[in-house]
Length: 181
Image 1 (cartoon, rainbow, N blue to C red):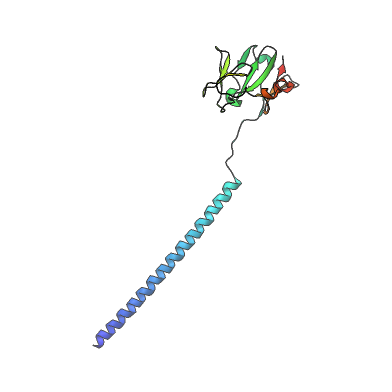
Image 2: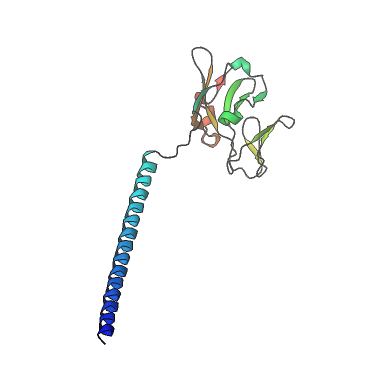
């Protein structure tokens, strides 16, 4: 019988050791998970700080650009040279040069120049604009906007898209909205 008692004591000691080992493993795994969570939170914070310091930046073309000499533009013609790069049409109506924004005043779609019909046309909703920029068909609520344009001392045209002139406010008569030719 003493063998049985001894065996039972060994079994209880082994069970106690197994239970202690199970608790120890649980504690180690809980601490590991805690540290991994803490490290993940610190890394996420660090990534957020780096994204704040180095944000995504949209590089746009400059608002002011040189558009060449006035004699580069034929009388009665619309130049499409600056449409893709700067979103501007240069118009020479025979008496003056002016720069028109190439965006429809309805929803901002890029207008196209239709030489055969002698008008600007919005491909999105069908608004039509005369060569001067006045709206005459479609849903556009107002004429196209003009940009500031001037001659510098070397005789080059300078277009400034940051300065806009609206027909409905009578600003097309402002001397900064056109260049006399």
